Image 1: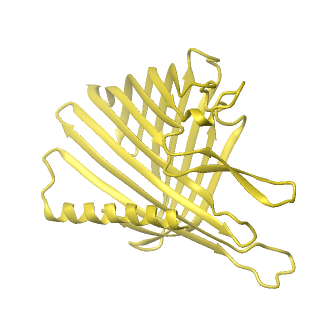
Image 2 (image 1 turned 90 degrees about the horizontal axis):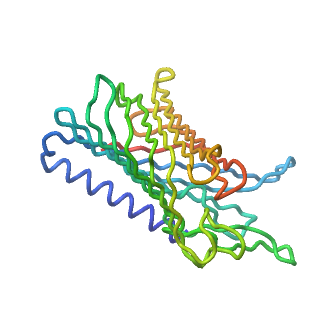
Length: 291
């Protein structure tokens, strides 16, 4: 809990500090900056509840910051996404993460014709803190084993392609010759098995493949906004019919300027990490601050 609190305070401090800077200085010409700080909270409590139940407390903090440049036929779009969430149950010994994400996206585009742009994509992903696998010992006590950490894994994507962008809320990018680099800590690689695709004794994996990303945001009805983000990748060098998928759905139900109810659903398919679909869902009451 102490580590999570420090991460939350750090993100909040950076957000508020940057917001104050924007108020006191004039933005550079051709640059557009905007961001959002969100704090989600949910709780379940039971007392003498015959049907059964488990007291839980969960929180999730996130910062989404964009800084974009446009001049003539050139656009340069940058987006930093950071989030961290934990849940604590009365009947479990450990706090468990519900979210842990640090991501940077950059897309350089030069207009080719109408909505089409020649583009160069860059993407970086990792996490803030340690991740664990949970189990039971011979006495039935819950135990955990460290499995991931900051920069383990870390992934980098870089590739030229074509961007189609109707507006800020509807766009997709195709990069048919994308280089992917995966970095891990050697201590996590296991004998006779791969860790995020990295073989025993190694700490990197290099791939060349096809990348496609898409973004769609729209108002479902008054005060309800739906945001969809999808990323697909296929490695030409190994099992080209196998696609990695990362899809996120965000639904924002606005209460007023500062408060919302948020639903986050995410699914990931990457057989180098897990044989099957990874699923994550977060629903809660939220505080937001736009800057």
